Image 1 (tube, rainbow, N blue to C red):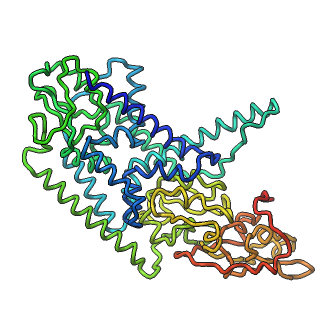
Image 2: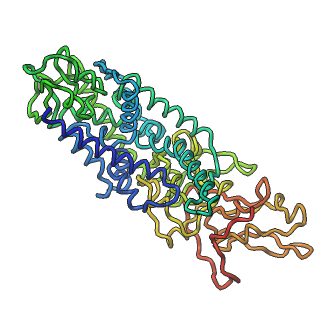
Image 3: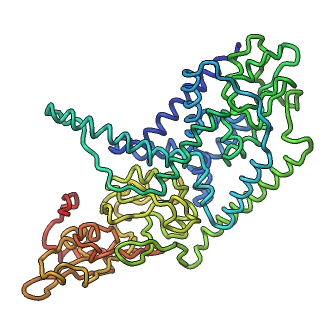
Length: 525
């Protein structure tokens, strides 16, 4: 047990990374600076890989660090850095506290299942679809569960505390409104929460060793890691304590072997072996404790074939990113405002084509959006863009001087923008529908859309009987949705039509503005 300290170090680091990652997704007050968000997501495998594919910059090399760590120490990513993996460890920990005699067993490998899932994901990415990546990537999966399930609970607790404290004239807590609910992402989040609870209760970390694509890739790489676990052929008494505590089910006590491709480097086996029969040490050559994942070299050849497909898909995606097909829109249509409209993609997304091929659907931007205009959707851009958020102007509007979503995005789906740059990005163009406007239908004065337009692209012009009616200047409209959100009619009398490729709006003529607009003013409707 001389190496038991390794488990303590692993647990401390895992708790630190997990708590910070959890708080990033739960932070509905904007307490954490955006640059901290990016530093925490830098080391996540899939987001950093996607960002590197699209930007080819050194600040997106987190996935290479993970690969190096794996080749040195095994799958430490799965036991220290992966929030979905650590969440499963928490479930196992709680279960063991309730049922103290919980024991794991050695499990058979499911090589074909692992490789098949990985190969299907790779082929789908090569075909231009992020759907399976978005569905199964552990970081995005944890983000969606946190935003869809845990965050509303945290907000409810905050609002309850605000109510209690206000009764004592203490306003330390500010109530937060949850403006929308979408059934599709919620149901999927509930389903995968169940999987991340049931799997560890029944068979430990088998989700990580059968379904998770990151676990499969790192599992194969860990077969070649410098430091490996092995059972000493002399000192091991075959008591089974190490096998019973192995969450990965990778220790075969009968043959005194360890399947390194499934070992998640939790170091539990080191702390329970009283005979010091388990060692974690450099292994520069194949030892008797190594287990191949098949009786022949077919698994290695299959892995190399899968990695070749992966490399080819990355080249394909990179090429697609550089040639955006002349702006051909590939978004699907969704219903809104009584007519079919394309979904409005967030600022910094460049185009639907770019966004759907870079967004992993982690919902970090949804969590960070101060106005909650970014809303989760199941397949607004089509099934190739699963879980990618949209700008929902029925729920809220986009702040004129806000760039939070572009600062927290862990991939290149939302490129970083300055406030000045963002003020000229045209997400879409407002379109006035006269037949729905209450000025036209009820001869009633309104002007809510014009009052809240930050660029004055919507102006009130003379109509009849002393009334004024909206008129849109598309060139200076940025598609922020303030007009659509403020419009009191249903269906809306003014809507934003998406630009499949974001354009550059002209700057408004400030000399024509008659008064200073307070963009933080509460909407009247």
